[in-house]
Image 1 (cartoon, rainbow, N blue to C red):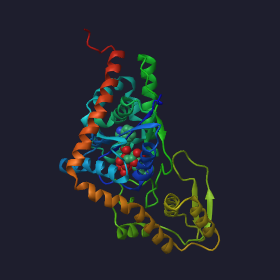
Image 2 (image 1 turned 30 degrees about the horizontal axis):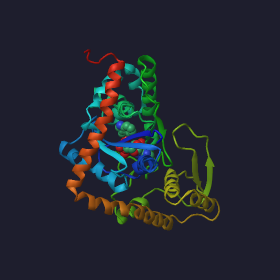
Image 3 (image 1 turned 180 degrees about the horizontal axis):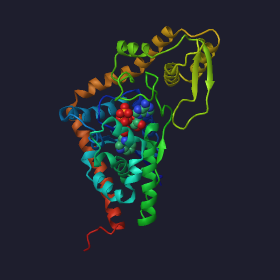
Length: 352
Ligand code: ADP
Ligand code: TRP
């Protein structure tokens, strides 16, 4: 008898081009789970989540499709994963409403992700924004997902989903599994500026998956560095602040850019190389120009096949339409079943 597979659900908001943070934080995990026969993988374009922040309608039409193209180009396979649109499965919104009865307004207002968005768009503090984590919990629980491959910034949302699942199971007798944060490496890719995480909303912080060699070289060259020689101190890690290591050069300057550079080296070349460079930093000193040029080349070599596949796929509009329609239907089938169960448990089923 075949083993029951665990489910995986993840999504990326359709808000622009993907960058290396998304690639290491979310996509690498999505790919790994797709290739693991123990899992059934559902990956959506989080288009409803995307409209919780201000957007331009015409650009958005393209951005939605771009996420599917990116998914396929990085190696997500419609034969193995269900690649669908969140908004094509109305049960997400229905479940979000039911689940919103299980969590307080205060809890939502205190989430760091909510506070960040309020700071970014003070004119757009809407109900949808407050409800964002509840919709995300609905996305996950609708598919009874066990694993959720995402970056570290999404951990508070996974916690909310777990809390809602726990409460729902206790109060109504549903059997939602408690979803787990899943990440292989790169749960936090730092910004190229050295400050905070790589993010599409921070200019100068990211390398896009679509960048060419020249652009990557320029961006890597701009990572702020120091004299190349000094000491490295390990601090007690403040939770999720990712400031656990500091590079202090021989003039006493602390460079967060060096830390970003080292993180990228670790992601693209490996931990060994980072250790080697760190030993040189402490001994003879590093020559950043050469290191940066090599790193840029390695990044480009990883991205080039993705870019080539993407260009080919963009021409195959009929193929895209077919796989999307098929996936939307597969997602709806699972979603309908969960909603029927939830309505029954909440005493919302039609009495016959
Ligand atoms: P952005 O912050 O650039 O708007 P999204 O919110 O669209 O990115 O994130 C999509 C996915 O990529 C999420 O799983 C998120 O956790 C992950 N992610 C985004 N930026 C990073 C990063 N710098 N490091 C690791 N993961 C990230
Ligand atoms: N909130 C996620 C982000 O900003 C996107 C997302 C929406 C998601 N629904 C999800 C991720 C469900 C994982 C599971 O990137």
